[in-house]
Amino acid sequence: MFDHLTARERTVLDVLRPGGILTVDQIARGAGLSKWKARRALGVLFRDGFAFRRQRDLWQIWPPLRTPPRKSVR
Image (tube, rainbow, N blue to C red; front, side, top):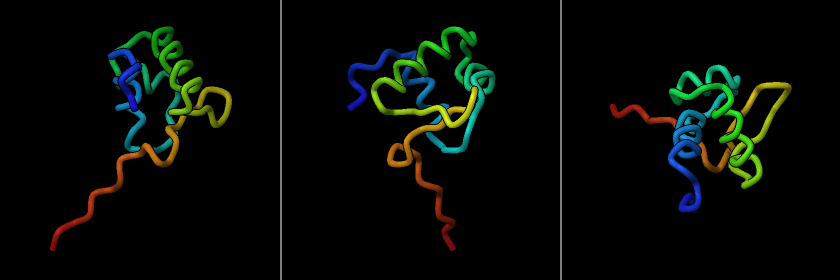
């Protein structure tokens, strides 16, 4: 499913995977990339249907790709 993605795109996807809505600045910092490289990776992820833009600069991963929350063991 992710075979065609570059290492940079996979890193951005990993930053988005827990869910939530992140800005490009937050994604770039989390992935250790410049904003420009993060934007390019997000463009590819959007084109391929892995991520989408909620508002102006807020990005989110598609719900089926999110990491499920951990269940506490008691």
